[in-house]
Amino acid sequence: MNVSSHTALPDTAQSGSAKILDGALAAKAVNQELAQKIATYISSGKRKPALAVVLVGENPASEVYVKNKILTCKELGIESHLKRFSKDASKEEIIAGLKELNDDATIDGILLQLPLPGQLPTNEILDSIAPDKDVDGLHPYNLGLLFSGVPGLQPCTPKGIIVLLQYYQIPIKGKNVVVIGRSNLVGKPVAGLLLQQDATVTICHSRTENLAGICKQADILVVAAGKQEMVGKDWVKPGACVVDVGIHRLKESTSQPDGKAKSKIVGDVCFDEVKSIAGHITPVPGGVGKMTVAMLMVNTIFAYEQHIGIQTSS
Ligand code: NAD
Image 1: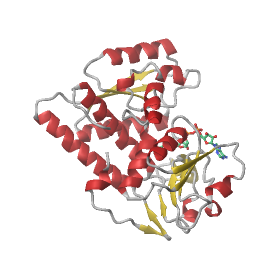
Image 2 (image 1 turned 90 degrees about the vertical axis):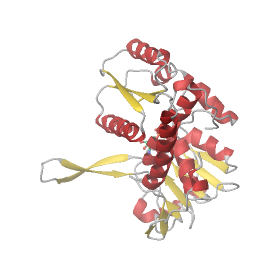
Image 3 (image 1 turned 45 degrees about the horizontal axis):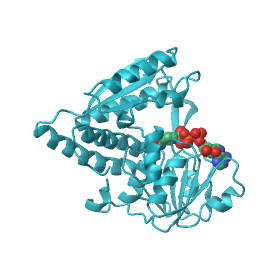
Image 4 (image 1 turned 90 degrees about the horizontal axis):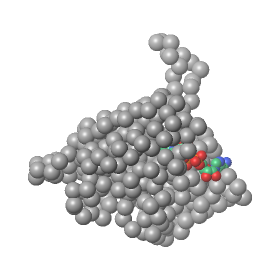
């Protein structure tokens, strides 16, 4: 998927001096392309693609994410099935449910919404999803393909970051890229994908010395530390491209007329400060998060194409 190759370069809204990398706009372009592809398959007599979403417990943020994913499926012409487990469900019950979905030939993708309730072994449960249906790209088999440079199901947030940079035609080849964070979900896979795009990649983490100094060398800075507004303007090289992966929901003290507390979402980057020095910056919300959902749809269609016998290169 390379939306920029056949999409005119969008106007990047100015904000301070930095140009905004609008994830909603890029995700819309990706989704439109997918919707057309799906419509063509259906009109040629193929079955509908289908995604199963598995939700354990009642985490309010997860409920919102799942709702958005199901809504996007509907807009694109992908069937969706929500399978719920109670917060007290055992590992065995969830794995049995996932195995049923693995064996169901009408299901193309299985998404296990994270985080799982604390007592459950996340990796062991994720590993029970069949690799060909692992649309989150987190199974060791798919992570192995990613680091081998072989097309496959790649984690949605890292893949979304690459597609967003491509959409805005941000040069990656030969650039000095610094990634803060080394999780399996974001940091490591995004570093692997950037390496495949011929970037020179440095991965930083909680034990890195001289973090601000290393970040200041970056042409592209990807921040996935999960630390609210950690990166200020002193960490950023003038003109750099800053990609903020963090999501932090803040409850504001001022209550609304309906009595509910207002919530604000911020990232790992001090947006107002950094936008005055960066060349490009992703907003939170409206940046990487939008791309994550779009890439889930891309992966579902990649899995569907493999299942119906159409060869693609991811
Ligand atoms: P994680 O907690 O698993 O990993 C955080 C990483 O950051 C770790 O590798 C840690 O070493 C590093 N780190 C922590 N504190 C640090 C510090 N002070 N200095 C340097 N490195 C530090 O988190 P994750 O799952 O990778 O997610 C990171 C953030 O991205 C979170 O805020 C999460 O909510 C968000 N996220 C957003 C999306 C999206 O779609 N936008 C998707 C996934 C995660």
